Image (cartoon, rainbow, N blue to C red):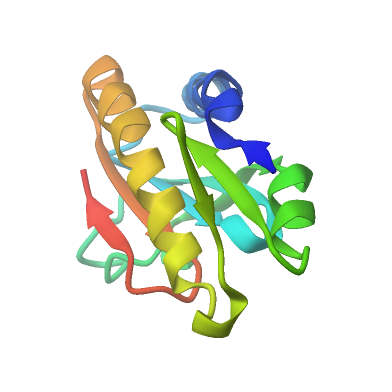
Length: 141
């Protein structure tokens, strides 16, 4: 079992550092994409300067600066690949059942990331898109 909450600070710092680095190297983005594949254990930052979210069709791989930064979360993948993976979020233990596919895990991590992205949106005064790979979980924040 792994406690996903232990990654919150690491994820927040990764995204904020990526935004700061992007601004130094380029300019202020008009939108920031957070693209995540929880079962493979990664998260990327993606940026637009001139393109709008509509022009990218709300799809992080279509941003102008795709995979600007890449965060590996090996422990997520390692736990997910176990026969009976178990995750803890907000003090709640959740057993993942592979028979139902990966969308439940996508939902779990998506809901975990929303407050992080909302906080970063307020801090950076920018539009964010949160998207899970190959999933219905996508939201403009």
